[in-house]
Image (tube, rainbow, N blue to C red; front, side, top):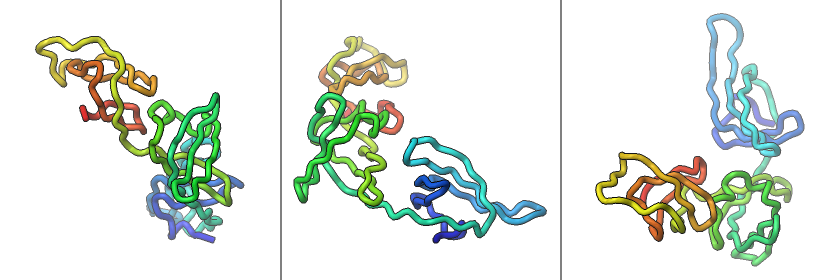
Length: 185
């Protein structure tokens, strides 16, 4: 059992029969009444993020999560195949288990699989990936980084907004959490 005083960012707890990851917490002592713990929790089953407030001292069952480093191999219809580089064990996951980050997943990309009692809960992609631009309108002389943005198709098929000076064939760095262009690689 874990109490609200033991909360840490990244800790997993079981609440209402589901595993929640603590993204943020704050101890709050109002003028009158007892102290409370404000939290932002991510439900690992649904992916939804909720704000919850608990009385100080509330106890929860701790969920022991294991991170397993794997490599994305290939896509097979609506499934993705991952391999453990140490044991060469392969795992097949449905595309719905990965979420929006799937747009930036290219073959041989290392990922972290978050598991609880052998069940895969979440796939964590690298924070940034470098991908080649396969199609975009050509840049013109005088285009600057701050003068605007245009759509570009990257090698995984995703469309991202890039500065006007980016051309087809350039390699760009993308933030997988937001899908935003960061810089030219």
